[in-house]
Length: 193
Image (cartoon, rainbow, N blue to C red; front, side):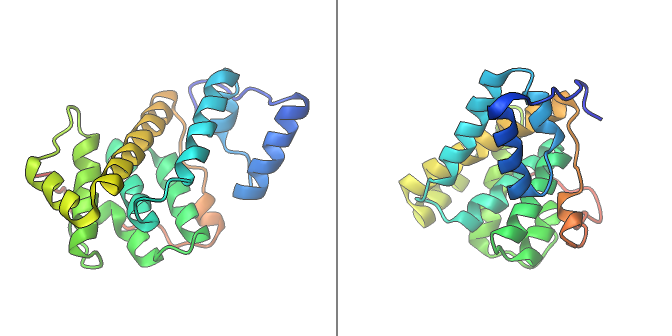
């Protein structure tokens, strides 16, 4: 349960925002109401999210898997649920999306995808643990513009995930509402090295 009760989104802008969000996600997530206590933070967060969807230097699938890896490591069940829901709606390989929380033990990912997932996790550590070798491999495989974009995308995921965890915002069953099977869980504790 969220640590701050949701604010009522009122007025013309609030009604329009709720209608747009409900159309896109099927419901108005608690996160929107919690963020509604500070409209400037809400607008900035949503604006940043919209802007990031227009970035196109890095493959969308790679960014989606990286997002899910980062938020899974941080422990944001809301972000992970939303990421899985969006994977469904955006036509991602759901077998891969479902396996992100246990990517180290899964056999569905390519070498490049594994590097991207490792990078997302390394960026999400406190402090970050990105190695020169991993960065060099990704630079070689993706190019500088895509690597910069991937890095910014994972950083934005960290911002949202850490805010949601701190505010107590949890999964709301968006993926389950689509009939998606539950996300895979690691069979044992895995090392981040």
